Length: 262
Ligand code: IPD
Ligand code: CA
Ligand code: CA
Image 1 (tube, helix red, strand yellow):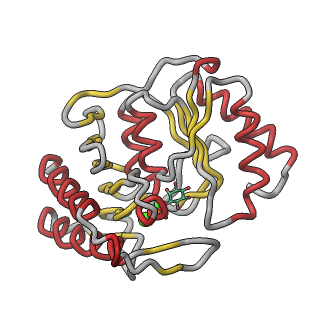
Image 2 (cartoon, helix red, strand yellow; image 1 turned 45 degrees about the horizontal axis):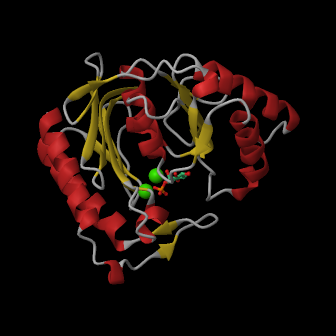
């Protein structure tokens, strides 16, 4: 199943790469600056068909379009293009994110980055991989960490919180990064390229696959309070075993000053 899933994600990535750039038909969805293109919809439709043929009994939950399913059984959680703003700008840093859940538990995860020809995969209890090679989170300590964060661009009321947290996280570490694809950031923690990540709000499909990659690679992913990630919009905090507790402290400190916001 995982091999076929990986194939489907690679094909979805090819659709991203072969997009007719003059005909993206970008429009705004609800929220502040929340774009969607015809390719988000095309890739989701392609995956919905592929995943149905892989496992007809599983439901489907995708970012684009009216999809809903019984979330007590088996269901796919799909973000067809994570990093739509990057895609519109041809910034070449967007991913396809697919997870298979059984009730509350993620069982399979795939994050494909077609621009680097990389596919990150994980199966519950069986480890995490990139292009078939095993990956682990880093052991880097705080002082040499590289930390990713997201700006929650569709809810700009979190901007003060986010940039204060980014400043406090940045001062003692090597540097910070903002990639524009949360799924890619989480995959990069799983393989040790990034050491930590936070974002004040993400949707379930943004982190559904990435959290299993991290867990299977020996890292930690939770919400800002340290609680397990829910199957809905949530804050997200993740990292290796050294950097995760540091980021939790940073977030707790900012939360104390911005009480009620996150
Ligand atoms: C977005 C990206 C971005 C993050 C946003 C997400 P989308 O997903 O993951 O990095 O900052 O919060 O919504 O809209 O490009 O699928
Ligand atoms: Ca997304
Ligand atoms: Ca998306």
